[in-house]
Image (tube, rainbow, N blue to C red; front, side, top):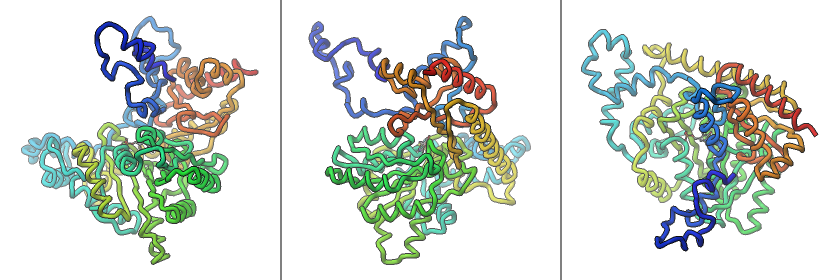
Amino acid sequence: MVWVVEMVCPFQSIHEMMNSNNYRPNAFAHISTLNQQVIKANYAVRGPLTVLAEKIQNDLLEDSNDYPFGDIIYANIGNPQQFGQLPITFNRQVLSICQYPALLDHANEPWFKSIFPRDVVERTELLLKETGSVGAYSASQGIPIVRKHVAEFIQERDNCACHPDDIYLTSGATQGARIIMTLLISGPSEGAMLPIPQYPLYGALMDLFHGKSVSYYLSEKDDWNVDVKQFKQAYEEESKKGTNIRLCVFINPGNPTGACMTEESIEEMLRFAKAKGLVIISDEVYQNNIFRKEFTSFRKVLCELERREPNSNWDKVSLICINSVSKGQFGECGQRGGYIDTMNIPPITKDQILKLATIDICPPVTGQLLVDLLVRPPREGEPSYGLYSQEIEKIHRDMEKQCQFLYEATKRMKFVTCQKPHGAMYLHPKICLPKKLVREANEINIEPDELYCLRILERTGVCLVPGSGLGQRENEYHVRITFLAKGDEYVERFIEAHNTIMDEYED
Ligand SMILES: Cc1ncc(COP(=O)(O)O)c(C=O)c1O
């Protein structure tokens, strides 16, 4: 959809603009003089539908609005605290003192002790000692003690050696992905294998860097596993065209699919990457959002292969795993904390990763502190352990319950099928859209599932992501919906509107 751009540009063409009376337009004045890679990039999670949702939200503030609903449900984005999920108490206690260390002057007063348990004070003192002020820039690679704790966490999780130098703290997962793609992709002859469907960050970055996205499909009927045959075929076909495929991205657990990759599948992908010299990015931000199956990290499997098959060049496979404080039970999306852990990266390349991190100066320091809390939660026996565990478990349970509820609800929707996710925060149902709706969408030049989402938004206030923005097979239509919003009222609204739309458009 291009209407957002067209609305703000008063000229039909750059020539019309140049001829208009005695000024030389600057490069912002017309879309053709902007970076065309930016124009090409598409980030459906916050696309035109979200813009419309925000407009409707403003309209809803007017008494005279005639929408048949009172609020917008932003089910388009995995932003837990927007849906009222409370922050973890321990996290905010530590951050509060880090933001305002003068609180420690009252550490012996009863009111202070009633708010801040002893382990909060100890943790804060340690972090402040290492960090100084949260208002100061930190090291570009990240606060050393936090990197040390991340390395320890990974070592314990995967039974695999990890060094603090392998860790780069980032401003959310997004910066980590951007740094690595910046290093590898600089033009149309350079390619990356990207999953379809896909959280659209990676496709958008490929567009920005003018690289060649090579789609590999996740097989819906096979629980959204990688379609290995098609994966290899897509690689070979694109390579034959002369594209130098350098990188392969996996999202595990998947967004939007919610699928956990099996150990066998990870191993198969690692073998392929080794044979073809592909760098792997494994985006593992949903590793703590698992309801069925188990999460296995790429790092763990690579370590096991190195042990099982020594001298087989496994140490030549470069792996980047990404994690974030935005997901899991923290849901601290706005604090922008994350990290990449790297494996088998030569020192010359590490220097360049660091250079890119240096250009961004440093990730938000409070985001880095949250990473510390993510990888080093209160331990059993410490004062905060009980409340922390309760809060984490409750958030996990509530999400699982809402996932189950929404999944069951899809069974009451006409022409809808849905794979039950293993985890993450989304359902990705397939909708067999009526031909009449598809024709109407074609006539107004938008994707059919986008038109469907538009109708749902207008009638229910529920904002979804059309599958076309995340990639899907031709003539298939999906929508992504988060199960973060609690309650059943909006779900009933959604089901009713869906079934009505299906009836209205019936051929
Ligand atoms: C798979 C995946 N990776 C990365 C991100 C971005 O996360 P962050 O907020 O840490 O940048 C998201 C956000 O939804 C995501 O789903």
